[in-house]
Image 1: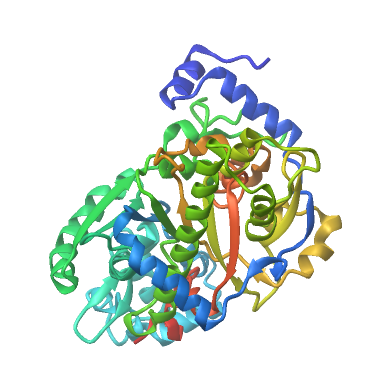
Image 2 (image 1 turned 135 degrees about the vertical axis):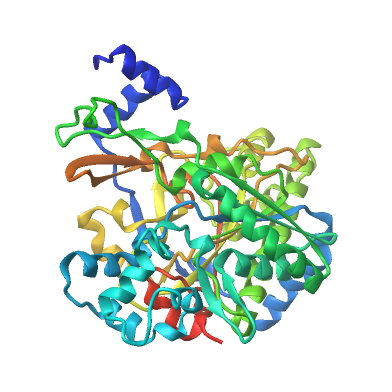
Length: 482
């Protein structure tokens, strides 16, 4: 057992944690997390559905005709600062060594949507260092400290738009139900005021443009999902004042936030995966496709459960549905109606996956589970053992974080999403604080370990629906320019 001081216990309590929970975290640091037992990649016709235009139109028609009967929310994880987006620029200021990103940014500086703001601090004779400093200095644009939600991504003839504004416009195209578009952003507390200030400027004209009402809500990552940091010998890491150090446990902790959203359908999409007006067509088409597949599949599940409750069901038809439509393994032994209900009565996610265009990495795989047999999972590359890298090399698709989720049961009651997490899928990484190395722990990822025991359907979607901004120079790509 670890010795905790009174101050330690007070700190732990202030985070909404208990000594027992921190002890379990320390145990996990020492034992680590097992690699995923991957069997093979999910591929077209083996875990991934690919639909022709007729089928796409069928599911879009289902979505468009049925969505008014559902409360729909778009969930956008947007908490973190954009530090990594500007990493190459920060590196230049520290080392003075030009890298490709810095050269590309400076040579195209007038093309960025934030250029008009930048002009206040630079002139035609400004050096490369002056330009980069103006972008990042705390008394100038301070872009690296902003969340991506508040960074100007796109420039049009008469306006510039922050990333959050583009999510509003995109959301209006497929999440509107009964005249309302619900969008939920996770935002860190220090950016809440600025976020609402900009939303108040943007929403009235956007509502008028689309003839709808926006219901914008926010939440922050909960302190009781934080994890304690440790030294490399797995002893408690302390700051210069002797206090424990807690760190946010990654996006997997946001399952708590997702669990509090009371909607029938929840679309999940990352804050930086957004494009411009003229290139948004495929995104809208395939979001509606995912929504239509969700509604169609969920309707079938609910009907089966109703029939099972009345003991009036066709077992052969039910087994065929679970095996071939849900792609799930059934035990060989005889199953009762209650057994089938337990199998069926779970949250469901329909995930868009895109074809690999670069090096294979995390994505859709068949993973063996002791309880459920071979299951479809989104698996990150860090979860794959070195001896299974050959399996990863055969993968054809990866995960762009494009999900339509059903989080209510057949009676309209919310599932408790925290009951469907595989807590063995956490992740330990090496970080530093004030130059001192430490080990940090992340919760099972939101769309992998936190959703392990959901029904999972993978659908191949075009790469045009995946336009992330991982570094600032990505904003120069055609998908981000009009």
